[in-house]
Image (cartoon, rainbow, N blue to C red):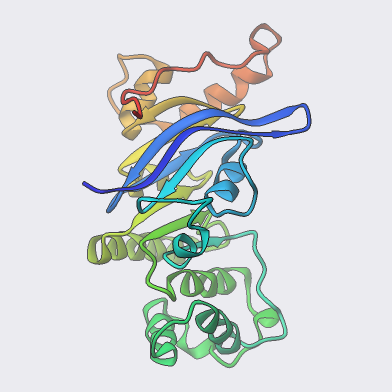
Length: 265
């Protein structure tokens, strides 16, 4: 399977603080991979580097076979993202927002594409509403439309269902799996909803204090951190274990990093 994202020895420092420390991983085309960890683990910094928003201190990023630094424009034309924490211009209507982004991405026949996505995410009735008048859940669905405008081959989803009610979140997760199956894109997915990660993701990368603790299927990661005797994946227990261990004075350095099962050459 083709590698969509390849990260080698990636690090990022902010002054004396090392937010990301020598991480390496891959995401293959057609995979949904969860990037997990407590607050401050380095998830957002990693995604910002993958999107070219901040420059790494060290390491290499390849997306779709292109080096991100040398081929930034080519790469960014084929990726997109959605985040629960990014605002859209509130005085523009839903249609106007999507029209602006579609033109920026030079989407062919962009009006038809916008209509298709509004229908797909079940918000056609909102097209003439100003974004500032929408609920947080409605805005989340507009963001998902924006993220799919250019038919990306790589999609970054940062807490994409955080503002959705349970029914809307379920529908969104179904859409992600449908899109992956239909278009074969690679998705890097962050969430604090561990049941959601277990449902959606093929693999999980669990990071803490900027380092990879474990990598593999949800069950693999659970066993690597909690013990080999575990019979069912329980990422919520993993999350709680790591967060509480890092608070203990006896483990001030944090849990010991675990060698990922597959080395990146």
